[in-house]
Length: 278
Image 1 (cartoon, rainbow, N blue to C red):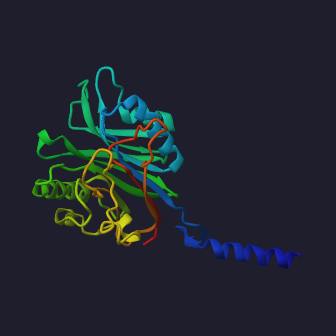
Image 2 (image 1 turned 180 degrees about the vertical axis):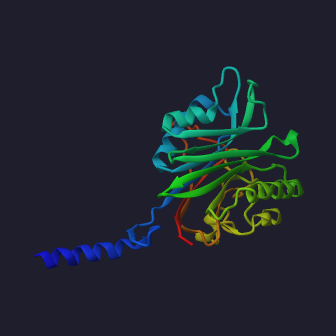
C-alpha cells in the first residue's frame, strides 16, 4: 500500500510540473489561466441607469480577473461609473483621467481587478484636448507579477497619424517600466488590429485574431450594429509575444436586455491567457 501511495503521489507531481525555488528545490506549480475583458461603456449615453445592471450582470458572468473600461465619466449627480461597477463586482478600481483630481467632471479610463495590485501609474497622451491617456498596473497573478496597460486612442477615421503618435508616446511610457515582466495592452484602439498605426505595438500579438484569423474578413465587430453602420473590431487585448498563450477569445456583452436595452454601443472582448513562463 505504501508503494502504491508513493506511485500515485509521483504521478500527481509529474502532472503538475515544477519550477525551481531560490534554493534550487523543486516546487510544484500548475500555471493558471488569466481571464481579461475590455469594454467601452459609452459614458452616460443611451439611458445609463438601464444599461448599468446589464453591464454588471454580464461582466459578473465572465468571472474576469482584469477588466479595462473606456469612456468612464463622473460629474455632479453621476458617481464615477468605474467605481460603481467595481463596487458592484467587488473589484478594486484604478481610474485615470487628464482632468484635475479636484474637478467634478472627469472623463477617462479605468482598470478593475480582483488581483493584488503592486504598483500603479499613468500618463496623458497628446494632444491634451483629445482627453486620451494610458494607465498601468503591476498585478500579482499566480504568484508572479504581470503588467497591464490600458488605453483609449483617438477616434476619427482620418486620425491614424495621431493614433500612431499616441502609441509611440505610450511605448515610451511602457519602456520606462519594462524590467522583463510579462505585459498586456488593452482597450479601445479605434482601429483594427491590422491598421498600420498599431504597428507601434511590435512585440505584442492580437489575442483574438490569433485564435480567429478570419474574424475581420468575416466582419466580426466590436461596434454594436444597433448604434453603428460600420462593422469593425477595434477593441483589443494585445499580449506580449512569447510570454502568453491565447486559450480562448470571444465577443461579449453583445446581448440586449429583455426590453431591448443594450449594455453599450460597443461589444466587449474577452480573452483567456496562459503565461508561458518564458
